[in-house]
Length: 102
View 1 (spheres, rainbow, N blue to C red):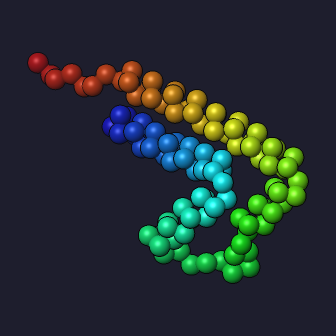
View 2: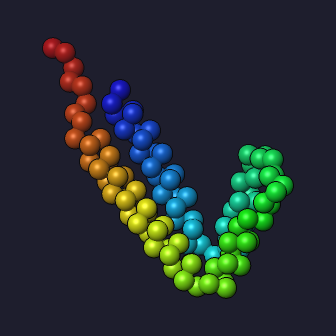
């Protein structure tokens, strides 16, 4: 039971790591990934801020320091998440499988 729980936590942390690392991709790549995921999962568009990603990209181009701050924050979060992934992986490996009753 614990091994399964650790595996689920590990999968969740891994997906979170992928989302965090996606921030380092250029805008064109993340936009393409988002469009492909929308085709698969059919999400309704949110009309008030339909192009929020592009607004962020424009701000980052006008103020490079904002991009640096975003990269530093994302790097800290990704590093912390990677640390958690390592801890969960070690804890999962330390669990001994149940021994057969003799």
